[in-house]
Amino acid sequence: MRENIVFSEQAKELAAKAREIAEKHVRPNAAKYDKLQQYNYDAAKAVAEAGLFKTFIPKQYGGHGAGILALAMVTEELAKADSGFGVAFAVNALGSFPIILGGTEEQKQKWLPQIARGEKFVAFCLSEKFAGSDASGLAVTAEEDGDHYVIRGEKKWTTNGGVADIYSVFCVTDPTSKSRRISAIVVEKGTPGFSVKKVEDKMGIRTVPVVETHFDNVRVPKFNLIGGRPGMGFTHAMQTLDCARPGVAAQAVGAAQGALDLALVYASRRRQFDAPISSFQMVQKMLADMAMKTEAARWLVYATAAAVDAGRKDTTKMAAMSKCFATDTAMEVATDAVQIFGGYGFMEDYPIAKCFRDAKILQIYEGTNQVQRMVIARNLVKEVSELSHLVPYIPGEVQQTYKNGGTISAENQGQPAVAAKA
Ligand code: CAA
Image (spheres, rainbow, N blue to C red):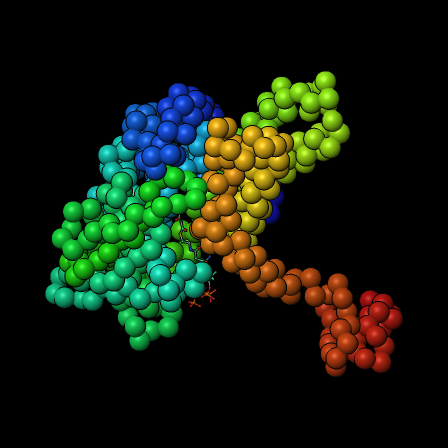
């Protein structure tokens, strides 16, 4: 995949605004909200006023239509100051993508302009207690009742739950179907029977709420069925994740850069043996590796985002690669950053401990990194037929005819016969 990575003026401006907000509203309050486990409404208001929620909303619905690359750049800047706030922003895109990608015109007209203006926040309800990686094994049901669906069950790990006004909820609408079992339905805050129950007490990303959402006979009009056609939910979920994973990967790049910046400053000023520790080769190796991996992750994310923006349909593998690589990088960089801070890094006195706690979830949510590797490998295997001619003979294969008319078999071991006929 070789797309041009074009940083539009608009994307650069949006990223610059995000950096400004991050330094003014996010970083100074990150430790406080982390301790209190509270959402930073002040920063979210600044993000809305700066028009940053418009980044991922198409132009015809009041957004900038700036694309996934711009979304990645904005998310990276916010996450650099506080990874939790990075996801608090990016999850609005995750929750909006089912509507953007699969919604009817009327649904887009109804919900997207409110999201673009930052008047309504969004959440994505896919995971359940017994359906995490196995996203098709959902138990929450939506039963037809006249002009309505009635939703019953519980969702787990709803990021932004309670703060959000609009929830994209994945429900079983046809338990008898294998491939068309699931549909995505919008549930709005305040709908009777919908409630936020358990607010999770988390190790990291404590500045964004993660909750259980409960649906106790929640009646929603059929209008809220995303796309107006039941059975499209799993496809909508997977397409959404293809667009959203570069966003979480960008959050990871921001998190890694944030940890690296702190470690670099600390290493340059912390003195041992009469010298700054940044002058010691072993510390230099760590800093160099941290910087290299962060930069490599950044460009993989940008390349993936550019490919999605270019309208390529086969971005699943790259989205999984960028999510997996960038989030593994964030964990490694945060771990090494704590090491550079030494004993002080283990204490909550410095912001680096928070970076370390915040990093772990990146390898788990929006598809564990084990799932990402499975997706990557499945796609590699699908693509293998294009390369088949590279290895003419595999032990156990009987005979195969090649494009050039040559044959291979156990007797000729492939190479000579093919070469002779070519
Ligand atoms: N785009 C479109 N369609 C796709 C697709 C894609 N990327 N991937 C799969 N599909 C389609 C397949 O073509 C297939 O269609 P048919 O039935 O018509 O043939 C169907 O979906 C089923 O595909 P699979 O057989 O590949 O499905 P599977 O059950 O074997 O596994 C999986 C798929 C990759 C494991 C998937 O379940 C998955 O991604 N799991 C992880 C879930 C996840 O990421 N959860 C994160 C929740 S959100 C979150 O964490 C965010 C947060 O809080 C911030």
